[in-house]
Image (cartoon, rainbow, N blue to C red; front, side, top):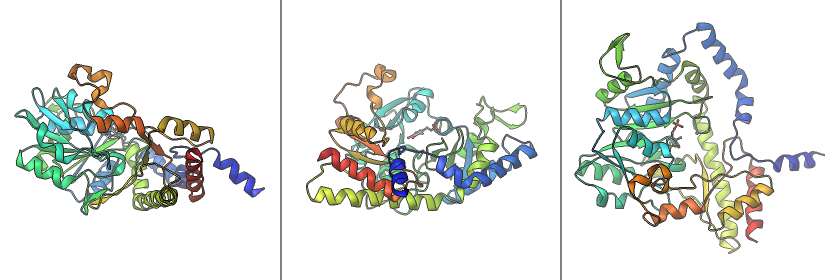
Length: 382
Ligand SMILES: *Cc1c(COP(=O)(O)O)cnc(C)c1O
């Protein structure tokens, strides 16, 4: 009977799910919700301040500024760094659209650099070639929770006096040579979208920075340009992190380290089980790797194979969900056709779009489920 039940459960494994976590934390989450409701202050109160302090101390920077989303964290960072019309900003074509869209939204032009085939992050060795007199900044993305090569990127930025805005939406807690991602740049940007490693019950984001001037500017920008109510120094936005979202995140913050450890355990289990089959030549897939300089937080566990679509379908029929992040590189998106890029311009990113597949990954995923997924992948290639 028990075995039968287990098997029924094993045939419906989501790519990502918060329901197991929410069940465990239900009482704490309901309590914090009620506290905010009873106090009745919903915008920029104690919970946002507490979270700003906790995230900035986790990353060892001076300031954290809660904003409405990860996308806004990028937008406001660019504005606070005075990047706008006529400027160029270098980034990766293999990312979520928000990275490039933020650049376009401030009137600047995104300039792409192909990725490293092993980490899928921007190739730091190719940066210099794309720097022009108009280049003002670099936005590296720590994709799937794997830190980009920040030491090299920071070196290039310093030589050419470029700003760095880190898109760390997928990588809270990740480190590069023992230093937190988000703390290398002029700003670091986080997203609290529900599916991220540290997700809330809606949209939310944060900018971290050691630069007090940038911090002040972002605080102005998120609040209609006002330091004091109804006294508007600049034209700003409405981009705040809600108290309710912050309260939920404050509950979850206590667990972030243990969740990251569990994600890393799951990744290690996937890789060691796959490796047995790869070594025996029964399987030809590329596994994610953790570079020597990196502490990877495995927002995703992503593999690469030229039979991606067939594998995804096969897994679906076995009751296993998997996801493609991302099927189309930014330079080939319709929204960016005006930039005039063609197929073949960034071959590594384009191959990744056709070949990557992210397998189920969330801290509450069970070892038996990981083993079951690996077996089904092996069956597919058998
Ligand atoms: C999620 C994400 C964003 C945007 O964050 P939102 O909170 O959804 O606006 C930006 N960049 C990357 C790489 C992301 O994964």
